[in-house]
Length: 217
Image 1 (cartoon, rainbow, N blue to C red):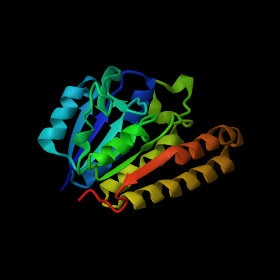
Image 2 (cartoon, helix red, strand yellow; image 1 turned 180 degrees about the vertical axis):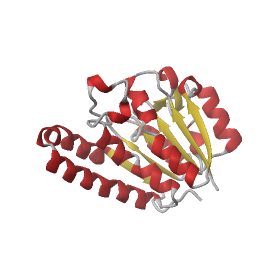
Image 3 (spheres, rainbow, N blue to C red; image 1 turned 120 degrees about the vertical axis):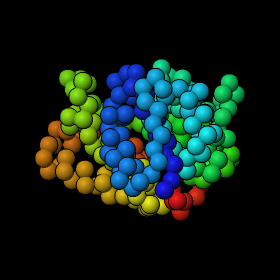
């Protein structure tokens, strides 16, 4: 049984979507009997994050939030993991598999984490694309436009929690991507023309750094 840490900020529509759509990730962690540490809502701040990382030493970390090339944020856009000089705590990723679902973190932050001996880093080097329906913001899990983006990106942490290697997890995400593309093309040509290019964009900007054979064990 491994220790798994996930951040679930929900202070705006985008972070709320990411957190709500993390339900399947949490379910998998529970079914796989991993010890799960959640930082939800306002609890997803730097102080709590650093404390959990230090005291529980999770082997797998999933961070939902906003981001840029140097930082990923938690509640109220506070940087919680960053290589920026004002924070500079990328050392906390040492010996961990880290997956960041946020914009831009796959560039400088990803490389800084690997330099700090992060076992494996998965993230996105530019803006993570997400299309959502304006009339569904109160019910993110019912938003059919947002669904493909989370169905695909969730495959990575779900597969890792099930014991797959990082490389295998990414492959499973790509298989899910192809299935979502086929589903959209078959069922809704309008949605397909708007969503498929951005699903492919997220694959294009995804980075996998470090040990691709790493597992959560």
